[in-house]
Image 1 (cartoon, rainbow, N blue to C red):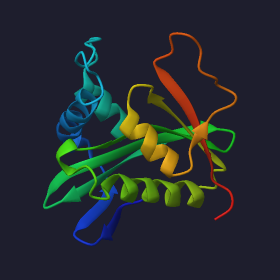
Image 2: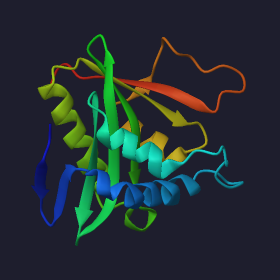
Image 3: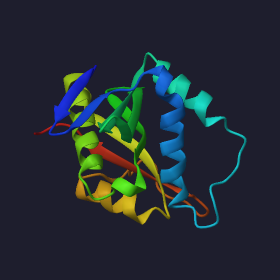
Length: 164
């Protein structure tokens, strides 16, 4: 597991439970950018959800920290059969296009390969063009085993981790 990785003035490290509120706030800011009618209110207690994710033994939550502030996060967990699920990858909107998402993605890839994973999977909101372009640039492709059907709000993507 990654404990801390310094990249310039940015640090990529594992999130601690006490940071769940800051992580939930960043998550809310990022999600608000791709829901034109506002973030759906489904009753989820995101602080509690993030505390659970941070404490999970079958996964990890990484964050990018700049000047003592969490500016990006990535959450993933073991999906079995040599696959890992990337559950969340968010960058604070005021820090977009600064390399934070790529740094987090790279840290995830390094961890997954060190853990012997062969593939990664994720679901991205179909209307989130920025995220879809990001994943496309990083080699993610539509998962042929999970095709989009009428009314789907998410697109399943897959990344093979072998090679490099």
